Length: 107
Picture 1: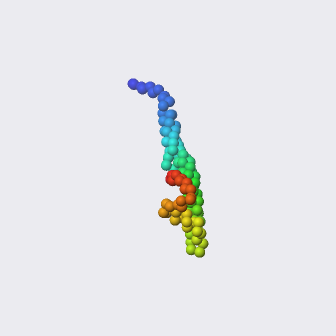
Picture 2 (picture 1 turned 45 degrees about the horizontal axis):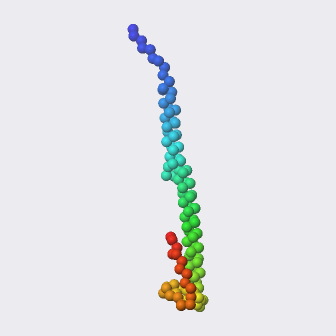
Picture 3 (picture 1 turned 180 degrees about the horizontal axis):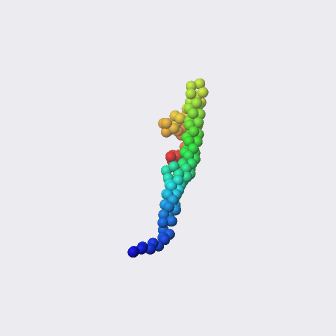
């Protein structure tokens, strides 16, 4: 009669915990670095602040333009504003005036 002796192995006990650790590591990594993860949230908040600053600058320019357009409406037309716009459009000045050339603003 033949008998077979089996030695108890400890590797069977480590299969389920190691699979659980791999499972949690995979989803934990994607929870942080994924498209909708924590890191993406911080990037979106930084982008939001940047775009809000741009929006505030554009709104300020719009208010300035609206104020300048309001000065040119009929009935409230100011001679200085008309003169300034005409000189800028025609690129002319009087002989007794000093012209200061400013660099164009970069966008």
